[in-house]
Length: 94
Image: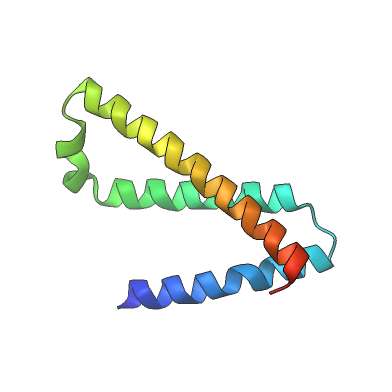
């Protein structure tokens, strides 16, 4: 339940922060890059905490490369989604 509450709070805060950054004339790409970097760090922390649960996924080298490939594709999709989200907030408002 806490996870759901935090997801709702942070999802609602994103457009407000983007609008604030745009009003202060901050670079959108820098904000997006920091967002991506923070998401990467949080992901690595959660992966490290639950490493025992993930050990079955990386038994072979093929599965490790598959996981890295999937991670790269979804990471790019995450970055592009926020890029278009920033553009939408800038053009249409919050």
